[in-house]
Length: 574
Image 1 (cartoon, one colour):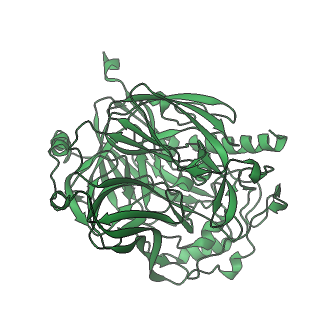
Image 2: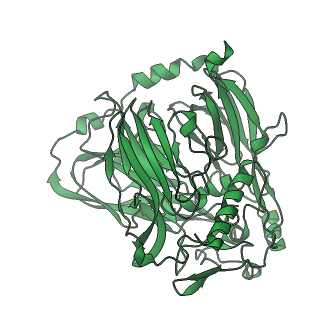
Image 3: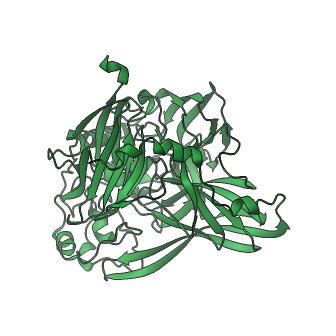
């Protein structure tokens, strides 16, 4: 590794470690001044170029001269892309109890829409391998880091042994380039899960380091009968006319709104396509791995119902017209395709333009489904039309009903502190208070987002009772505790946003939103907290260890929005 590469590694590692400790990295260069550019990359210098904004939201003239006050970073500087392996579509890996998987994070060459980019891939695949296991299985993953940054793997949503949760500074040291780490993963719950880095995931996850785990129940009737099952990963990539928009080397960038992409990817492809037969019922297992973007997904005119969420089925299946899915969340959807033809999988949202103070409809195509004239080989229409009640989930949740109406044990306020930013940004944000959407479905203020970074933006989890913030908060529980947590997303901060809050190692119920009881529950690990809302979570503290709780917008995580809590083993009281 070059000397400059070592310096970059130290900077990026220091950025995450400082954030973990609740200390923001403040770049030494003032906003508006430029950091040194990176060395030649394929014959030219990597430099900051202002991204082309959406046509509805032009940059304000006063913003045109500003650049992020940090060094631009993209992987593979000094590497000839032609020397890298071409990334290939993911493979399905079936693992039995006790099996071992060798998994490596590597640099890959990806060709997207005719352009070549250096990106990352687990085992050189996009997404990473789909790991299929049986419920209650335990597997070993021999992980090797072959990229140019420190990294780890977090096994998102899995209630596994704390030692293998993949959080540097909490459960393990970062895995440095060339080093390895052995993970042992136990899968207690059926469902769809995913894995991703927990070091600078704003870079590594965005550039391809993510994959799914499908945990199969031994009950053959756990789900409804379907003609096929499709595991879909939703993602977006932020591009300009030439390449991927760079990341901040010293600290995360796009820290205000988060990094909204402008190229949609489904299973890593910009042109995903699925062919089915007329009358087929398809189970879609959806995962949102985008850094920031929430989706509202529609499968053409197919009738569909929601079946499951992050960690369990719902108490009752429900007909839905679309599926809202925030970063890190998963949903299990079943859809029936009755009519031959070609149908688009779309993201249908009402976007907002803060520059003009306007709403506008936004419909983006994520992929296409072709329904042939040929009839389905098996007809599951009868079972599909029944909205099943899941007695196993109902009975499991019923055990926790005595805790539903009691006062919260802990409260948190979600807010923001703004540091030194260009005065024009402060001026615009101070008057931009007419309306904040409950959840941002698009980047409504790209000019402010462009110069925000983890040095001048600090996203906060604040405990009102103690005034402690982020990693200064220290909650302690005992295994078996049932804890009620109330989250309030302060609408009066300088720029409130909806936050997908993720708890490691445990499962939770979203009990209430703004005093309205949730009528159809499922076990989850990530809950969206809209702007201005109060949300009550009930958490079963079943898994001992020291765990993270954080916003799963990657740029907000890098800007400090995380805390830790400890669950002591129940036998430790004796």
